[in-house]
Length: 318
Ligand SMILES: NC(=O)c1ccc[n+]([C@@H]2O[C@H](COP(=O)([O-])OP(=O)(O)OC[C@H]3O[C@@H](n4cnc5c(N)ncnc54)[C@H](O)[C@@H]3O)[C@@H](O)[C@H]2O)c1
Image 1: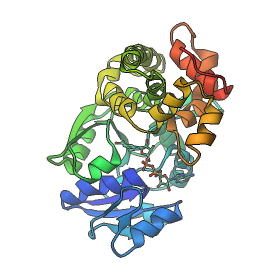
Image 2 (image 1 turned 30 degrees about the vertical axis):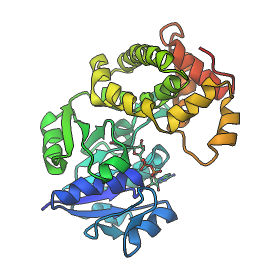
Image 3 (image 1 turned 135 degrees about the vertical axis):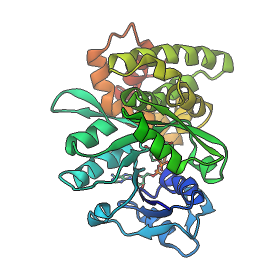
């Protein structure tokens, strides 16, 4: 029995507790930010308002504190949204945390100091180079994982043995794990697919969306290679796998659909999705200005159009 701490009691962090508990590990979960999730996780029946199910009574809720991170675990899982990454990077700075860390969060950061894009694992390592960080990405809807639907994901670490060790700890009959050494490529693909699923969602017909899907893959290869990932990683679960699930449904493709109908981003957000987080939009705001400046618009025309549509609130026409 291993000890696992999950940081982030949102949909994904809570769903991730299911395979961990099915593997008979002692699983702790903590929530540093949201009162709504604290209420769900500390309630008697552990009904999770995001997942709409009762989590296992074996899941142990712990109040968040910096000291909690210093206890001995076999694994610490980061399942915060992208906006929580600066917070946890700060908490881990100069910390003596020895446990391996597995990052589920998807996204990229723009680093003002070096005027460059950084992945989440790079952001955590910059704050504390001694951390042992792996990443887990891929097509995984939290609601489906929490109901034990078959799910395949990929763990990346330059040291593949560490990745395999973690995979062995968490895999089950329904949670299947693949491995990669291309940490950067896996992180880039799993982030930019949120923008490309908006682009595919704008197609409005299957015929047009399919052609946008194919062109999105070519652009993803270009971006991944330019940012020092391996272009073949686009064909992995973190790339095409995750792009499929996001384009087939979800908030990014829904927003894309409104953009395809001719609404501007602001209008669509205010009218139809006021309370929804659109991760693709957040990523555009984080890395869009950098992409417009550093990339060639002829190589990635769809990405340029989507960035301009969101940043300048222009109509999105392809
Ligand atoms: N790797 C995977 O298999 C996988 C699958 C699905 C989702 N995800 C990713 O997991 C992340 C969380 O997704 P979710 O569906 O659980 O979202 P959610 O909205 O249900 O939960 C978000 C979590 O982030 C925390 N948070 C939000 N803002 C914060 C802040 N400013 N400071 C600190 N914490 C903050 C919330 O309290 C909560 O714990 C996203 O990045 C998502 O893309 C990963």
